[in-house]
Length: 136
Image: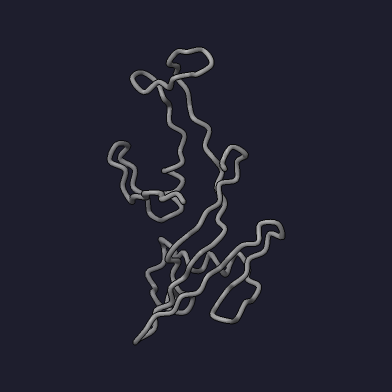
């Protein structure tokens, strides 16, 4: 399992991220490895300037927290990668879901209306699967 530390502000670049998706994109942005940060190459035996390939990740599950007045409730969206379909697991009820259903739990940087979160719930924990061949 990989924990990705996301920030809303990146001091080294001065970038300010407005939402989780922007922060994720910033985290996986290509970086030039040059000068003192050169990468050691096993093939040629020298340090060389490079950019590392960015592994591809796909969202496969979202745990959602729905807050009520006196208690909370959790449910989960899980994607069947082979069939490319989302499903909602809510207690003993499993229903087919859409990507739009999942996106509604992410919120919006332009929306200040919290009532939408009470209806749909808020994404609490996101799970990604690394899709490149080299990961085991």
